[in-house]
Image 1: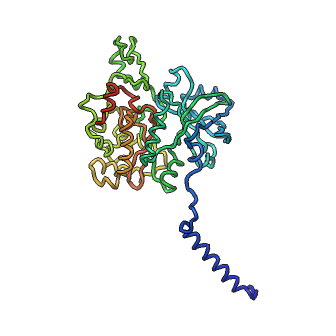
Image 2: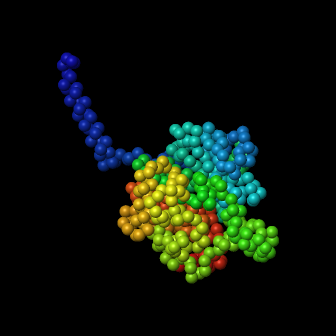
Image 3: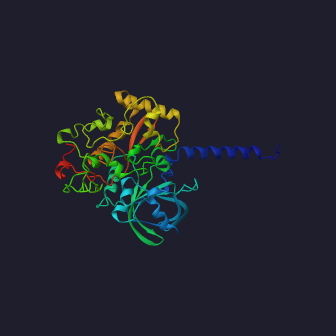
Amino acid sequence: MSTHKHFDKICCVVLVFTLLLTVLFVNAESFGIKKASSAPGYESRLFNTSSVHSIDIVMDNWDEFLADCKNEAYYSCSVIIDNEAYKNVAIRAKGNTSLTQVESYGNDRYSFKIEFDHYDSSKTYYGLDKLCLNNIIQDNTYMKDYLTYQMMAQMGVASPLCSYVNITVNGEDWGLYLAVEGVEEAFLQRNYGKDYGELYKPDSTGMGGGRGNGEKFDMNEFLGDSESENTDSTDTSSGTNQPNGESSFNPGSGEMPDGMMPPADNDRVQNSDNAASGNTPEGGRPNGMPGAGMSSDDVLLKYIDDEPDSYSNIFDNAKTDISDSDKKRLIESLQKLSIGEDIDDIVDVEAVIRYFVVHNFVLNFDSYTGSMIHNYYLYEKDGQMQMIPWDYNLAFGGFQSMGGATSLANLLM
């Protein structure tokens, strides 16, 4: 026991000082002390849109990697972002039709995905875990993705950050790309905090399933039925059928193969609110939305039954670790959605409306409201759902012909 004669006084002074610090801490903002920013560092660095950034990919086996790109295999590399080096990160090719089409375009400018945490879970780029590098070769304007994400952000939609980057490989120029924040853990924390919910990327296995990035996607299989029906066709005026029956379909050309043309004018959008509410006619599509509705009911967010296996195109493409209770909760929400019950509880109505205001405006049919019904993320927490935008390089009518600019402009009127 201390016998210092001033011990009691010292304790009182320490106690008073501690109380003062506590009061100052609790009321810091009222005293003019600014709260430290919780924004991740990458937001103001790589995704500062005031300039074009630089990324140099450094790897010895680049040619081997390019030859293996269609298999989406991961390779180790180093990346130098705006003169800051990050070693032992993973890189792979990414894309759906764009992945299979790059070679047919006569080049090897694939889109890439960089995973900072692939080999070391603690490694990030100022908090960013995944980075997508889009080649935007199907967009002659180089602006559709960028503009749409900026519009989504201005509307208050939880959407990926993006910026332009000039890529070099081992010091040699590789071209202008669009850097896009990966919709994974860092994205979730930035938009929803550490206590975020569940994330899915619904995608039919026939439309680039697996990871939803081109695995098992086969354009010939995709066009199979329409090709077999037109094998004897010699009409090449549309550019979609050749004398030998092979298709020259280019997803960025504004044309569609037979069997995928949009409906007649009187079948087009009758009420865009149906898309936001999840109401769909028998057979699948949101009312009046263009396209053949060739995907599965689960990616349309339709209630099928209570069996998780009936929603494999959702649950097999989960981006977060999900449990049986998570599956049950989402199925219950889809069931309520199908009958219009407790909408405010199972849909973040304002967030979904904001999403569809922009989405419908930019006329992106390579999406939930198009023929293939994909290219969106589904976020769910406590049974409430919302949609996260993804992949708009074929927006502004770039995916399919709708009878000219006038028809496109008036499509949603």
